[in-house]
Length: 94
Image (cartoon, rainbow, N blue to C red):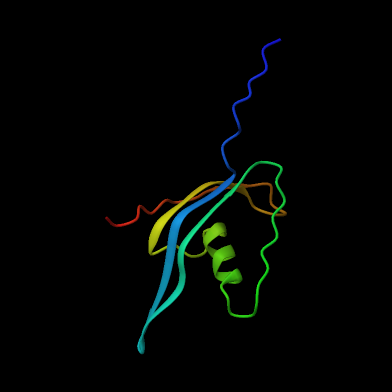
């Protein structure tokens, strides 16, 4: 029996992700240089104070928002639908 010890690729991966909001009053830096990898079967909790970027991070992971820098990659099953969404990637500007 041949058992591979190669780890499975992450289901969710963020690499050096930045997110800035641009409005009439200027620019707001919401997230800076965030990296995260979640492997299949892993359970992750995102906790923090109000206004620290938890919902913004989840909006990036779900594809609702696109990063202004960095890469969002992976495949995520949408809860309750059984459908799979392929994430778009945005390469960080050099």
